[in-house]
Length: 78
Figure 1 (cartoon, rainbow, N blue to C red):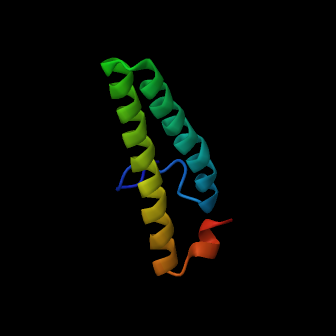
Figure 2: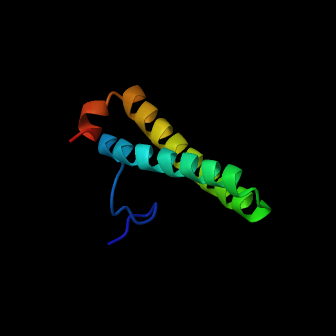
Figure 3: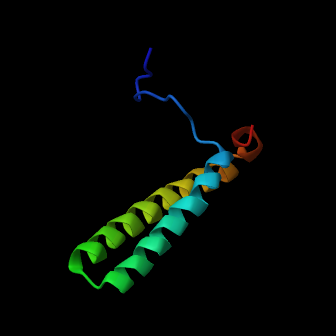
C-alpha cells in the first residue's frame, strides 16, 4: 500500500553514492565527445547529461546532509 506521501520503493541509502562515479564519468565522456564532434546536437546532448548527473548528485548531497543533520547517517548506511 503506498504511503500518503507517495510510493517509496527504495529509500535513500549511502550506498547510492556508488552511482555518482558512473554518472560523472558519463558526463565527462559526453563533454569530451561533444568537443571532438563539434556539432550542436552533441553539445546539447552533453549538456543534458551533465545537467542530469549534476542534479542526481545534488540530490545525493542533500539526502546525505539531511541524514547527518538528523543524526541518522549510520541508519542510512545499513
